[in-house]
Image (cartoon, rainbow over the protein chains, first blue to last red):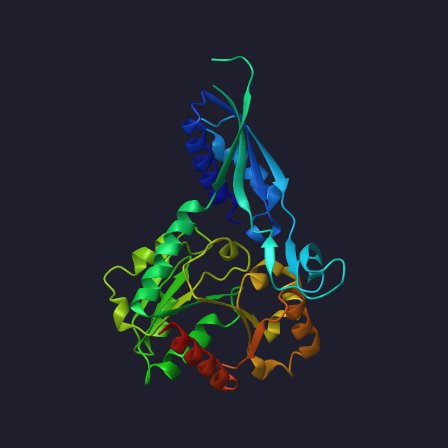
Length: 115
Length: 222
C-alpha cells in the first residue's frame, strides 16, 4: 500500500498549484484517477485526510473523477472502452487491444479555492 | 478576497517529479548505451534466483550490473555478488517500491558507459511498483508456477504495464499441477500480445531464449 506516499505527493502538487493561483485557502482538490495508475481510490481517500493535516490543505475535500481505461481498437478504428480489467479487448467488437490511450491518469485537474 | 470560492482548472501529474527524473535517467541510459531491465513480482517468486542466473550467464560476454531493492537486509545483493558482477542494494526502509530518485542515488559513482546491461530488481510487490517509472527500457513481471494461474487477473495493472512476463520455477510445474493453458490465456487477457518466457533458474531451462531476447535488445539500444 503506497497511497499515503501518493497522498503526500498529491498534497504537495495541489499546494503548489494553489499557490500559483494565489489561493488563500483550498476547499477541494479534483483528481483524475485511472485504474492503471496503480492507486486504490478508497485507500487514497482515506490517506488524504491524514496526509493533509498540518498542511495548508487541511480540511479540503478530495474529489476523485474516474478515468476509465480506453484503448485504440485496430478493427473499429477508434477509442473504445475495454470489456474489463481482466479482459483487455474492445468492448464493442471483442478484438484484443494493446494500445491503451487512457486509464493511467493520476493528475490534479482542478481546485476549488478562495482567493 | 471574494466570499465565493472559485474553481480553477489545472493540469498537474501527481508523480511529475518521478516522471521527470525517470525521463532524465532514460536519456542517460540511452546516451551511455546501457540496456536497463527492471524486474517486478510478488515476494518469493524467484526474482533473485533468476537474476543470479542471468548475471552469471551474461557476464562472460557482456558487462552487467544490478541494483536490488528490498525493505531490509543486504541478503539479495550478497547473493547476486556471487556472480562477480557489480551489485548495489537499495534498502527502502518502509517504502514498498523503488522510485526514480532511489535509482539515481544508487547509481552515483558508477560509470554507465562501462555497462551493457543494468538490471533493477524492485521490491517484491505486485501493486505499488506499477505507479513508478524508473527509466527502464524493459519491464519484466515474474510469476512462479507455485503462485497460481490467476495472478494476472488479480493484478492486471502490473501485467498490463510490463513488457515481458516470465513464468519461473517451471521445474515444479508438474508437481503443483500448473495449468499452462489457463496461465497463458490469463496473461494474454490482461496484456494481449505479451511476450512470455518460461524458465527454471534451477535447471537452466528456458534461459537460452531469455539470453537471445536480451542480446536482441542490446543490438537495438547500441
